Image (cartoon, rainbow, N blue to C red; front, side, top):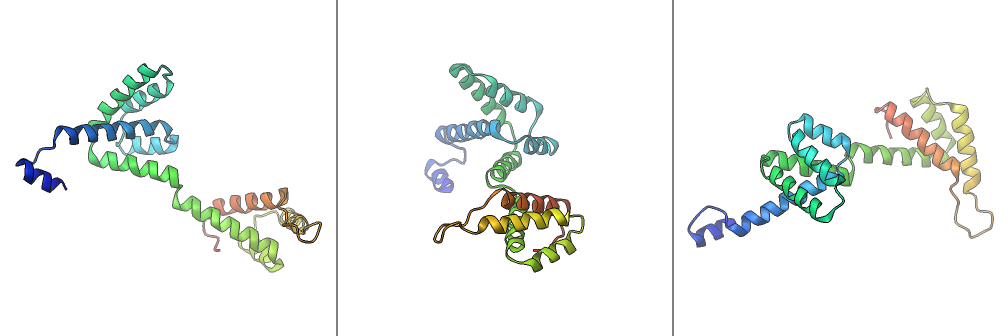
Length: 187
């Protein structure tokens, strides 16, 4: 597309429209920086993809409530964003994508915890396996939670859906904490 435009125009330089579009995209990216988690911001700052001046401008824009003042501040943020390298822009986009989708490690941890919870409730063998794999787990507490979750899951009347109570959630929390502490527990 760009090659065809350049061929038709007879020049390699971007048109005014292209420059404005890129400028607006950078300003929107700067606006989305306002919602970026602190840990991701710090990582970008440490990798020199962001600078203190840009972060201060973004924080100031988030603080401003006046419409016109905020619009002007966002234009300033856009100006600072245009000074960033393409590598920095790509790193910012990846950080925003990670924030929206969650990191692969977090998703994996969530799935492992859910699978272990289901296995613990379904089978007594899984309880013994879990205690073997994570001996630091309070086995008495875990057994009590599993018993309560099994009891809660039985419907009171025939035809009702199973109910998941507090014990069901607590098993998940306990398993997740242990998985976070020891990354090498298999599924």
